[in-house]
Image (cartoon, rainbow, N blue to C red; front, side, top):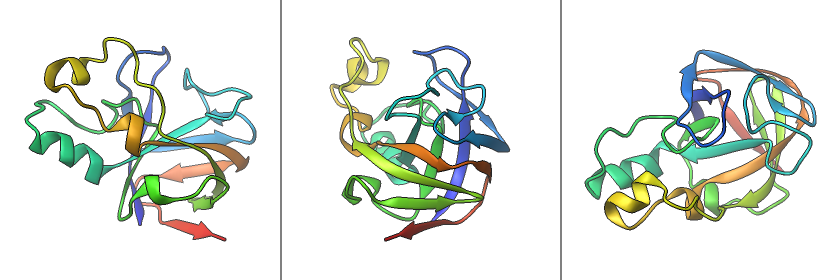
Length: 143
């Protein structure tokens, strides 16, 4: 299990841009990201497997960050992790706080094909130990 991409945006409601490394702040999230803050959805994660599923349905132009996820992962089904699971990602430690979310009204991907993976397969975490995350860092489940 590893980090495929780290994605950031200064505004909400727009696709995120990929960066090589991110600074994740305790009880805040990804430094400089519009979704960071003192709440339960500080960091969003989505697997490349979910993105590839949407590509197979015919959605064109998909790449990391298009679902506004902060961390794109590879190697496991995120949505099967129970709330409360801790993930060691690079120097950081995250706690899963929510599985899925309500899709934004008028989501471009849902409009195009009538489905979207983020509401079912994306997860959210809060940062319980801050630090750096770099592309290709390993992700370890801590019980």
